[in-house]
Length: 178
Image (cartoon, rainbow, N blue to C red; front, side, top):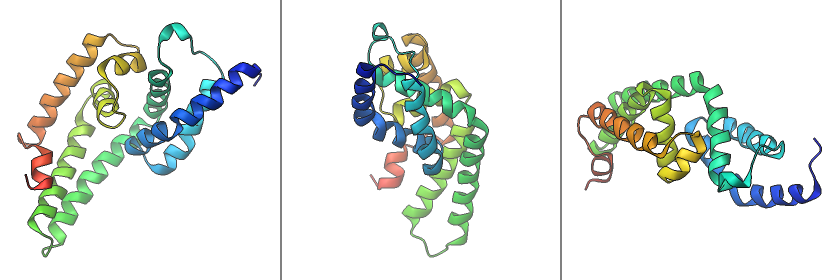
């Protein structure tokens, strides 16, 4: 790959500034092993070009690349959420001496994983970019190349579906006793 020297320096700076958070986002969506491979691939794609300063911040662009790569692994991701759901339910049922808080948290985690697997891919991408990537609505819009209003509507729809799937339970209150 023929990368001009100045761009190479910028890529080094971009890599140093964003690799850890891109890796963390991918690991939260897929697995740590997948993140090891895919985070590197994000920066290989970035090195190949395509970024235009007129697009704004580089961070949402990198998250957009990561989200596209994750989409290629969508079937694995959905299987993982469903497996987590089943595992959490089995663990909650098989450990009678587990505290009530831990059992409740395990059930909630399983239900949340199942609910996430049940979202359509566009809604799930928005939720996970906000929740795991901690991107703003504007950054999500840039990452997914969708209008700002679409981000808000997808997030609103997903929140309603997740809330319904969780039985109107606030996960923070259930898992933290408050």
